[in-house]
Image (cartoon, rainbow, N blue to C red):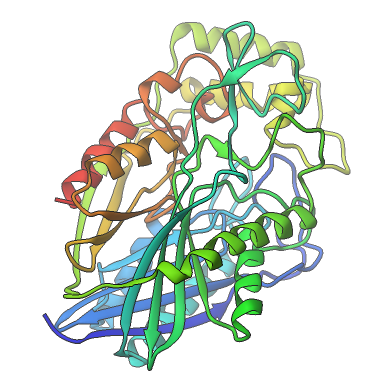
Length: 444
């Protein structure tokens, strides 16, 4: 055990004009930015033990890119190689980093990301200085809703539409817990980490945005009256979002990002009086690899996909608007065709190679740890990990160390819902259980 030290650096990763934006099924070319995107790198040390966290204002990053980061660190002899948790805020108004929804990642942007990630980690490493770590927890249940609903016909539907009279009840709940970490140097707060479970999909449109995490950071900085970095670590959010179906309010706009971001900021700021200094800090990291198999299509599912495709094969997406999962609930023909093709690809063009993913755990003492999930896990997966963790405060990092897409538990498959609709890249229905088991093994 040694003196706890902290270092930080930040890099701008706002994409170039015209770059394709991630988040929906249609092409959206960047027309500029509402706010700039960044990567934030935090480095920690006690004695000879190091750990790092890099958070990106991006939709996702994949395992090959993460391996490239660690290879570059190892080649330079960095003590951070293999000890960094890489995660994303999942903004739906940032660039692609890999293929998704038929879109490809931008090679030039990926190379830039490698350079800036290593640059930020090296800067943070060089800026290590004595620090103190404080924690608290709060709750907020007004901005997140389970987005999968059991309908009156017994089927599950994602985003069924506002004021839909066919809604029976939500399929599950949300995670209202918000763990908060504050780092201080010379009695001055120098960084905050906020762990919230919600989907980052409020802005829409063709302009780059950090979505509500960016709005939350700006509001916290406004109250602090200086640019304290706020690192948002998004928790399990695969089956939740910000849409309140009991209202007819428009909830897709930059103003919605501001409303939610400022709302979360108010909740976080009001909890800071409870911050408690963590003593006996002694950093520990652990990693594991596991196979995340691809889902297999049943004969019935394959025939249904072929039938849907034939019925909608001539449909095209109209220009001039975003196509989202809400269009599935509306039965838009072009979107039905899109998902039928994705399902058929499980049989017609299966991925043959094994998919090996990674999880990492960083513990700071016997009370505080953070663990990653290379996916958009359902909230029930996070609940199970927190319940089984020996650490009183366990932060959950979704979209961390990779991305295999939506991951639920076995009961979430086979009854409908966009997230578990079959596609070539969808993980097997038991991968969620494997992630729980692995996370708890790391947290022992």
